[in-house]
Length: 422
Image 1 (cartoon, rainbow, N blue to C red):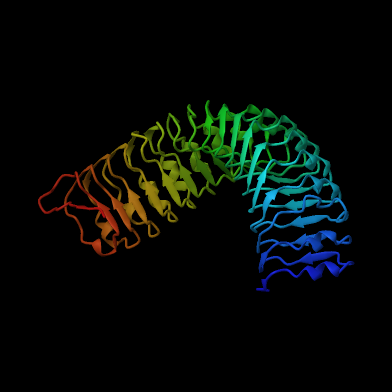
Image 2 (cartoon, rainbow, N blue to C red):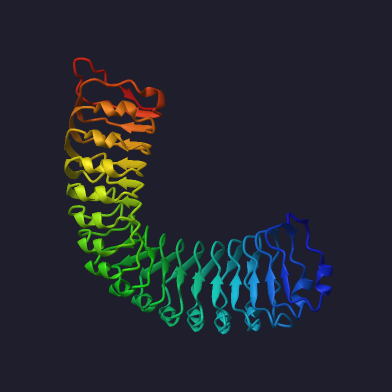
């Protein structure tokens, strides 16, 4: 309602109040201590204000025994999570996310056995993830992301068989990804990016047929992606960029009919882009740059009519010609193929993409003249053609180009291919 100011302590006099929702306003200052004495309260929602105080150390010890939902996320609360929270034994939902809470997660949190959702992300929490969390067997959602947790993921997490969302991303967790995570058969979302995990992707992950996405980006994972990924029929997105993965992209990835986003950049992936990738017609993003891929770009990629971004740059060994079938990708906005060994002429079809914003095919071995159709494409803002063997007439279309780089090409009789980078 756009309310401002502080929450009046007199609100605590409403002794029969069951639900208090002051969310999505602009309240500041502390949470009045009187609120924690409201013995009939079952729902407390103060989400998305500017409240700043710590939680009482004896919270739930004397009152709030009937509290079921505690939602005080998106504020400026600080201090430690009180261990007395365990006395609110009826809690099914707790969100303290996006505050400034610090210290350890109290082990007593394992006594809240009715909890179905626990969100502690985006704070300054530290220490180990307590193994007692494994006692919360009714949990469907657990978010501990964007904190400072260290150590290994407790194997007791395998007890959370009702879990559908697990987000441990952006911490300082280390060791192997425990195979026990693969036992969470109802899991749909798994986030473990931006940590210090090492070792291979555990084989149990590939048995998780309900998983919609997993994100292991920016760790120190090794080994290769298993061919068993073809069994993960619900999978839509994976994030594996920024690791030390080797081996080839398994062709079995073509079995994932609902797949939308493939991100494996900045690894040591070798082999060719499998032509089976053309089966993934729901795909909107392919990010395979900065690897060791080789061989031609499969013409089957032209079936991906929903593709918005194709990044294959900095592989250095992708060769062959530019498939004219890329011209079928009418949704494409970003086409980055630079720093490879592509050869032959540029198909005119590549300049008929009316949504294309950025085209970088520089540092290849392309030859011939620029297709005349380039002059009709007014969507391109960034055009990089540098260090190829292009020649011929350069058409006048600079009025709608923001960045253009054409240096290091052959100058034909009427051409003037200059470097217009800016």
